Length: 118
Image (cartoon, rainbow, N blue to C red; front, side, top):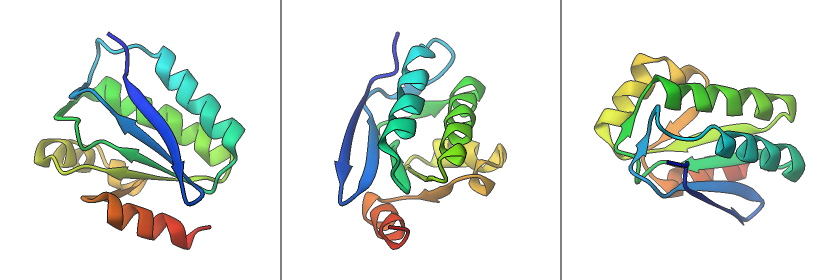
């Protein structure tokens, strides 16, 4: 299974919208490389990862975000995560991802925060 996402830009902010309900071990790492390449080439100050459809995430999914964060740090880009799932938010908190990413429950909040960085 491959990580299914859609990339678009809104007001100078890169947005990755994940289209599947899981970000787990059986997903492909090829998409992670694609996401890192987009971040490197676009050279934008902010990227939002819309995880609203993600209902399950495991340590491999967390690892994907760490790899993406490392690529974004090299470009001085800030990453924002958006999720409404209590389970996903709990996993992000337990794994201390909230110390690496700005995490929001709505796209409006994330876009507003990211817009300040432009």
